[in-house]
Length: 218
Image (cartoon, rainbow, N blue to C red):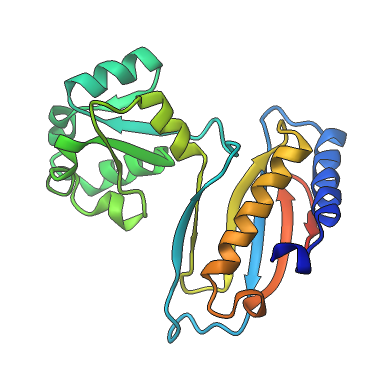
């Protein structure tokens, strides 16, 4: 369905343009490539707000900061994997201090929490993580922690809030053109399937690197 509106060639050219701009002015960090979407014929106040998550084949943000809120086993695994972690005792010490929790939530993009701990999170941290849309994803003892973290890094979320603009990380400037294109095709198809009137709700689509100009896709 995507191909009727945007040709694969067009996506390839747009990705090449963003990666070329990045290559002209290399930065000391790996630039993220963002897909920016403008919607139309939607009233966020009246229409049902959609929300959906999609796991991409290639990880767009390999350096995404994740913290493990773990029991003893998961804290040990996180330590071995070189990941940040906190146990219940450490969180208890914060005494639900809003400033401390806000700072903690800001430091990370996402959280993983042991299944045994997840019900205690609201009691330990109050609504802080939930408010910023970072409530932890559960992990069990049979899960591979590193794999779970990578799944999280590969997952994007489309959620309509009060404004008609959406933006998701879709790739980075170290990825191949093909890998970024594959992520984009899947993401656009998925988003369009979430929209009430599919393509009739799409006003515009742009691609942009962290420090590059925007390139129009649609």
